[in-house]
Length: 425
Image (cartoon, rainbow, N blue to C red):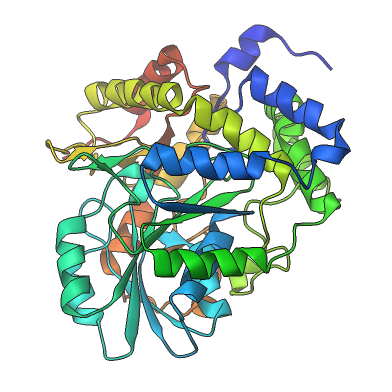
């Protein structure tokens, strides 16, 4: 099936393996033809070494996802049943489910104006059962890390940085992920770098590193079938699914079909939306996915420079909208995974955008725990406990910044929102 070049250039997507370039697709195809390299190989160790050097940390350990990395860190910190883990509202179920898996209790903290954990609400929600704070650098924007570190220190808590969105972002010249006791990163299909699934746990503390290493070595590799699913994703998503989105929802229907017959995996399993961890987590990172991640890590500076260029177009063209992360100052060097704006009727704008072949529904909206169809009560969330997070979730729309969004397409998005969006009062 062949689709016209002009049509492909006019399609705008936020998710579905957006980072993949032609060389990444070719690499995935070649790996499919080399089954001997799927599970074992030297690339896992090389990825860990290169990642450690990039961040300038002492220790790094790879896993098959960010949530597997988080489980390893929580285990290393001796998190046990009944321990309270403080985590912000406006987060993903894949962060909350590992807490529940270990029998710990998630305590949800509201967010500040930067969509990150609010230090003042954090103070209010610490109890004698609190053990760990997880600080999320939302969409790549560094949280108020100085204040949070002070609160954590005063209360003798551990601090974990959730850097799933923020690989490459810096605060006061230091990379996000280098401030807490440990941090985890995601190489999911729509992250800063992507291997469809994959993650990394990092720390500068030997005692924690030894425990994470012990945990990692005790894990099996994912199944061969699971690995094939991930290698197929860049090919099917970019060569078949995305082009079909030109034809009245065929792309979405075909994607659901491929996931139903298990040719492709889902980014978030339906079990996770109900507080249950799927059996393929936690696992070690297979060699084939390490190859994909290494390819992306080698070009991270170019990928992130492109993101900054696209964000500059949004900020210049959409200054009439409420953009909560536009004020950064000298402390923060931000690499935006996506760029959020706030609107009064996000559902209406998404429907209108789809008619223009613009697909912006990335799942980070409509709920304080995403995806939006998550059963938040199953994850221990009580409505009203994080009012700002709930309000932001209703209003937010996230604009793509990835390498396959050109300056021309970014300007097209600016024009769309200027014409149809509801501007700030």
